[in-house]
Structure formats: C-alpha cells, structure tokens
Length: 235
Image (cartoon, rainbow, N blue to C red; front, top):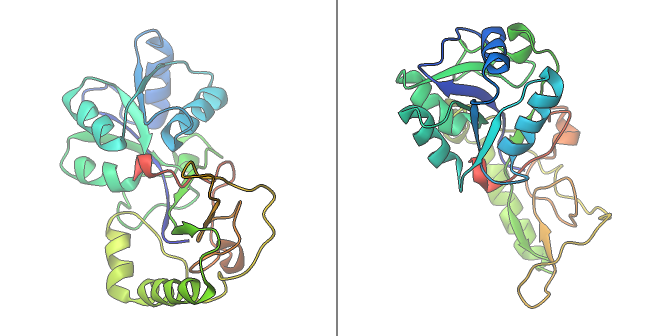
C-alpha cells in the first residue's frame, strides 16, 4: 500500500450554499436538476454518491465521466453541480477559488487543507470514505522481484521529501516498515484478460498473495469504514 486519502465533497462555486447542511438542503429542493459527476459505474466517486444519497435521502442525476480530471473541468465551468473526489484533483481548484469544498470524508481534517471541515463537523457524521493506491505485479512473480520492489517502496515512503510531497496533495503515507510484506490466503483469485494469466496485487487487502510496503492493518492507521477503493479513475 502506498498513500491513502479521504475524499472531498466539492461543487461549482456558483451554488448558493455556504456549508454542507445548506448544500444538502439545496439538493433536496432541486433534486430533479442537480447533476453529479462520477468516474464510471463502481468507481469511488460513484460508490460515494450512492452512499450519500442513501444516508441523506437526497437524489441527483449521475453523469458518467472517464476520469476525475474531466469532472473537475466541468465543475469549474459550471456544466455539472458537484462530485466527491480525491484531494489530488480538488485542492488546487479549491485554493484558486474555482470550486467550493464542503467537507472531508474522514474523522480528521487534512493538513493540506485545514480550513475544510470533516463530515462530522459539517453535520454528516459517519460519512467516511477513503481511497488508497498500491503496486501490482503478475501472480507468480519471483520473490527477489517482490523483495526488491518492497525495499524500494519502504525506502521511498520513509523519505521526508516524498512524504511532504504527498501531504501537499492531501495524501497520507503509512509508517514505513517491512511489516506489510507477507503471504496471505486470498479468498478469491483474480484473472487478467491477457491469456488467462492470473495476477496479484502488491498492495491490497483482498485477492493478494504479496503486499509491498506497510500494511494498514499493522499500523492502526484509519482506512475508511465502508469501501476500500484503489481505482485509478479518481487519482
């Protein structure tokens, strides 16, 4: 596992809502016309949208995109109203005043944007979502390759410059250690489409025989209570 991060509830700047409670009230009043950008079915932004609707009783139109960058472009231009996205795509536009950020989907604020409240503070307690990123190699990769990659990841995550750069983007690194490299018995095998060859993740909590880098279960770091999403769509 590499960095992880919560998401941010974000909207176009022209929405007449100054906080999350006002945003939810505005959505309920305009639910037939409110548009929400999601990076495809099953993506982190899509799953978070469904959770938001279920928890708040709101309804809005889901607009599918190929990636979070396109979503933010259309939020900035006013073509869609809102989304829930990674800090990596939200913070720059929020800092520039091009988008409005209502809440971080975690228990704690992020150091890169301490002015954005948590969902608990904003009036939506328990709406926790998170993203994580990892490395994958084909199943059957030699142990020496796994060991070399693991060592490189652990060394990189221990570098203060790397950690600071991640922090600037709203991402958090686990404490570097070798504890994440272990064998585990996968409950399901994942198959690639390339000749039926199986593959394994180097940094995941499911379907893995190898893990590179620190393990979140070992460090006690927050992992988000409802979904583990490592989809590249929202990076």
